[in-house]
Image (cartoon, rainbow, N blue to C red):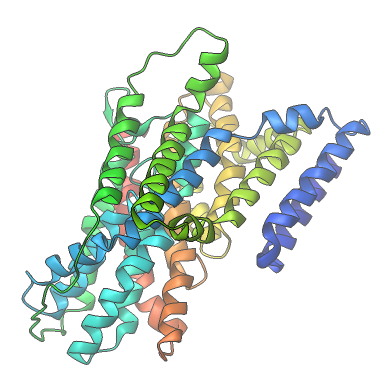
Length: 439
């Protein structure tokens, strides 16, 4: 177990130190785990490593990314943002509504992609009104991070939870006779909206926006809607008893996303009589995240087979005792703090089996349902990234856009919005999840 723990910690340190090379570090570590398995250090081989990879999750992420690229190029998000802004009276409401719109979009679209969609509108409004775009884009970024936890397809961490816990699209809204995590996220959004209105309370300049964006292709929008509808429908398909159909059933969500992406590509390439849409999708595909997750799944199988995950679960249980509220609180706020400085994707991927193990130890070893801990983990890890400028990819993307436009982003500029936004959203979700799932 010691060898596996040292290799795992070294992998994390290297990924934090050399973020550009994270996928290759993870894949190299996975290969070393497999080699150590063949050397008899712990029970793991190539077959068990490849079997541990959640291909449904990888297909969902890849397919969704492709559909999002086509959706952005259709310019529908920009049109919707302009329509919203044209209905508000002043800058305070314009920024708040734009942030809320980014949040709604990010419940179904990757957070970085959401920032790339909505940021140009925020820049245009700021330029027209002669105000600093820095707080505007920061508000857009933190709002997109918040809503990523609302649905199965909202963020990579949500997809990881769905795959690990066997949750379908509807489970995020209603599961086991109880309201799901979606409503906790929305309570957090409501609380953070009050914070944004307070932070921008002095910005009362009048707004007069024009509808300038033209959408000439509505098929990508239809594909986005079809993705959501088909994922919902797939949740009602009964599970086959076994065989090939059972394997297909386990990857149904990923196959839906990839199939719709392929349909969209064929349509777009045929319509434009060019391979440009295919090149655009391949260029925007986040291959680093896919390779990182592929390696992480095998690394996690390695530390599981070596007993590291069981040891971590026992450590958490020793700290919290048999008190589920104390354990839940520990998971939420440790996740918030850690995710402010490290990428939440490898963190959540690692912690999900740990949380499952902790839940099994509760009630004197009789165990308890792990959902309250799963939702606490997802809430803390997703929102914790909003505490710092480097805590989430969406924050980094927003700051990059600002710098390209000649703006200086100071850490205190980010903290002024990120800290109260995060604390209000986390506390709202923290209370909701415990009242619904912990008591």
